[in-house]
Image (spheres, rainbow, N blue to C red):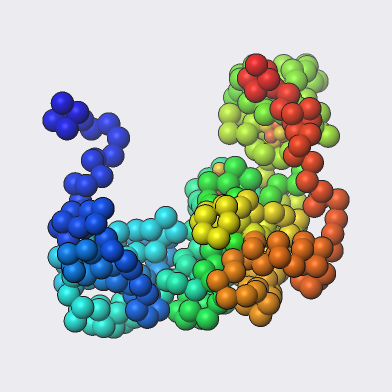
Length: 357
Ligand code: SF4
Ligand code: SF4
């Protein structure tokens, strides 16, 4: 019954757009291997071979770019392509002879091929100043500056293992910042500023009070306006209140910035998935090229490349040598911001009624 149901709610059934070779070998793949940077082959028990060519994408895609990718897919692989969770574009080919001409065409259009195996894949990022209201930093701008520097590691496979880099522009972390080898995270560092004159006209005070996950907001009458006040020590600068009320402004051009986290991974190879941990609490927003952030990430990549053992992910390497030694060799000062007090969060952060009951 469910198969026959026609609906416009939700995504179409997953197998509707699969290439015929994937349908024919579904669940019956024997092995896969990396043939060269950016190129993989999956071999089915039937002997069928599916070749994948991975190229970078600029993540925020113009329609012209999508059309160009589609034209290349039509030319070389019957129109079959897909986008990975880190915004690489992958062409799915059945003809091995089409691999090199496709790579040549991609390079001619200015799109590098790589990101497979022991390399840096495309950097997944969030919306940044282009779109999201609560961004503490830009996303595509920082990532562009970063990838310009890290591109050799996209195109070769000389790192100890794969290195996943992510960017999110606030601690809501729409990007995979919590589980990436190196994560770049925009941070607000001050509580929101309240426009008490506008607030009563724009916002509902009870909704605003309820929006705060730490219970830092309470109703208050300020200069005759029915407004709110914020208990500063309780605020963790998440910007949730700004989402429901534009009069509670979290963005601050002077104090917003970027933090760097390390050691996360999704894979359960060798050991369980790991959360990223804080390495550098604050770097300034310095558009258009964010030199401090680029320098810090490049330094971490080089440190990892030099010191980790083969197949060791960033977090596995740091765990082996110890976090204190990592901080020492990375030259990162240990500060109060590195103290993980999450175990006490039940008593400190989660005070709002909807989390408590
Ligand atoms: Fe918006 Fe934060 Fe997500 Fe960035 S990470 S897109 S600022 S909610
Ligand atoms: Fe601070 Fe977030 Fe609460 Fe707003 S919602 S007051 S930013 S903790």
